Image 1 (cartoon, rainbow, N blue to C red):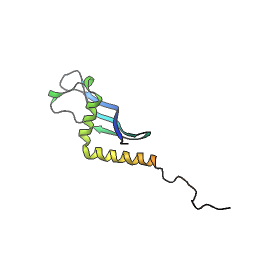
Image 2 (cartoon, rainbow, N blue to C red):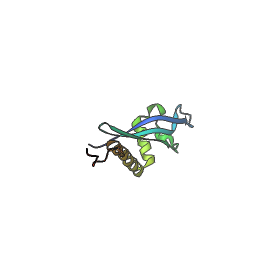
Image 3 (cartoon, one colour):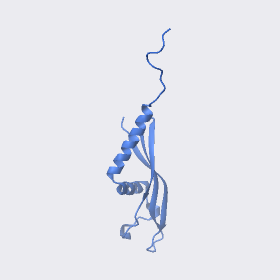
Length: 113
């Protein structure tokens, strides 16, 4: 089965919009990126700093920002190479849970009586 990846936004930091609009600009997002394959789950946490917009023409008020919007901003900031590396790391973590190392098994030749 394939790994399903998802974002969880855990916190945001914002500053007031300088243009007089009664809203805030999100400048920092804390997140958890998780992968799930059946009962196996692995996660990576992080923090992404977002730039304040140069032009507020397309500004989205804080109250209208959705999780999908934030995830798109995070992915755009991190870039596909970083997302792929995170997915590969999560896959390795899941594989370690599925196939644990150093299980402490007795030797197969055992003592005969």
